[in-house]
Length: 265
Length: 267
Picture (cartoon, each protein chain N blue to C red):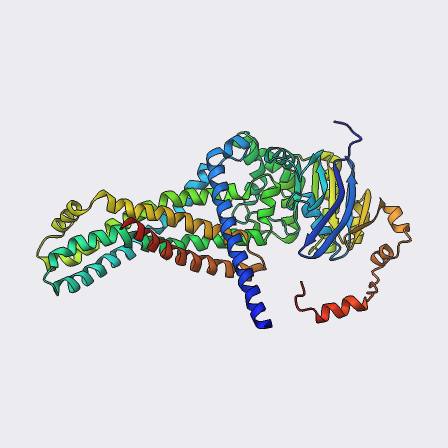
């Protein structure tokens, strides 16, 4: 009986905590958007410089690693589709298979996972260590809203850069696939790319971008909210960083599945 | 402004962490121009009281008025106006580690004023000179010693020329000489900038040196508020324990003791 009530109690506590967490993240989203739009009218203006700085860290600094991964994914998809489709003698369908799977799925997913690992964790670590050393309290007492100063620039930068990186990754991955599979298909890489462009509908690309926008919100909110709720010194910061990456990736994959289901019905 | 009106008025302030009551209806007021020391041992509730005074916690019951504004009910706009007029120096300095010392000190000016960059630079260097850190503006906080960090934090706290300055544990973690210098600095600042200063500390020597009045906090209650001499003369046993560094006698309540040992959900 005791064991039952004990586990019921911990289930209840976990439920309350996760509902509170979602509520807190929702409030952060609302406040960040509010400060971005109307902050200047209440003496809490969003600094464009901070947004650009975040955009550089989240987007520009990630270009090389996104290139590498997207190229690899493109080549890998080329290999797999040629192997699988040649069994049915349908090699010529490789182009459309790669084009649709990259733009609708892999471009957004790979970029988001990468950015969650790079920038989501960095956000959690930065804000977490600032919380521990009372820097967040200091900002608040100086009349600088921590959400406006730390969260809003990151959210805006993420909302711009993640879709941009996703489009970039789409292009690089298709290029990678072209390099590998052109010879197997007896066409030039240029012809491969041209064929891809004629096969792609705007809807395919929009699907990836819409996902990227949702992933951007998820990564930022999880990073920022775990950062702000850090307690317990340096160890707490480490735990929050790990937690933000694991949570972000889980939420990204689940959201991706839900999105794919509704967009492809 | 009405001179007689206190800058800080706290009425029946209560604070709870979970089921534990930290502050038991604290009443408290600080007049313009005085240096008030809030003194108390560890666990007396002085950090909690400070967080309420700074508006970092909203009071569960009772009220806190800073510069005439009830910060539990103030709008964001009013709160911002209050915050522009107070300065806070945190225990560990709380300088933003990603910025140089000069940028840290200039931050409130950059955020809250429309002054041009030259003026901001001069004003922040001026404040660094006041705390004897002239020429250190390009160093990062990690390159400073403990005493320098506290002085830089003080420069940031006073850069907007606040009416009210809060100082959390000025001597914590400093050697006696540096902490004595910091005490001198606090006194000088009050005279030069005409600020009202609230210092939270458990350090007796420094408290007696800088205080005009002292409030002694113990287990969530204000035991007394009075001049340095009055506190020294007090015949309250707890105050004398604190002054003479006597370990307090812990009285064991048998029922509560048994309950703590046997209760399953000890909160």
